[in-house]
Length: 118
Image (cartoon, rainbow, N blue to C red; front, side, top):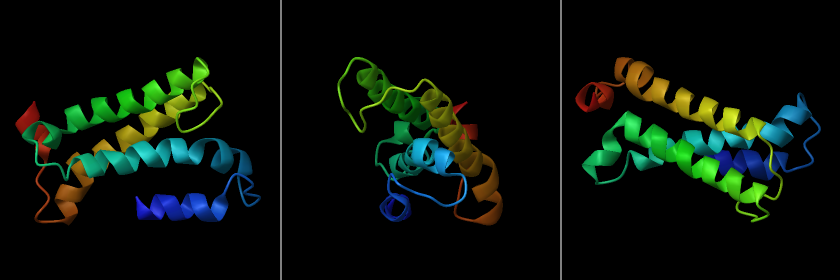
């Protein structure tokens, strides 16, 4: 989450480097659900160890904030963009893939919670 905050701090809303439309409009919509997915894994609640529960919860919370923006409630932003839902999904799917496929192969201590929750 610190890395995500630093990216946002250095790019800001006026990023002018490569792919400015993507970075300014959608990068954080991918990175924030991605980062919070892994923060949920640090919880002591056994239910939050399941990749399915973490995925649904993160997509749900992110979608709630976007729907609130549609109704004029500025939660983590002011502008409703339906493409944001796709970006939230991409962030959650990437996190789940790393959690259940990639990290268990790299780190001995990483246990795939997906098998326990299905």
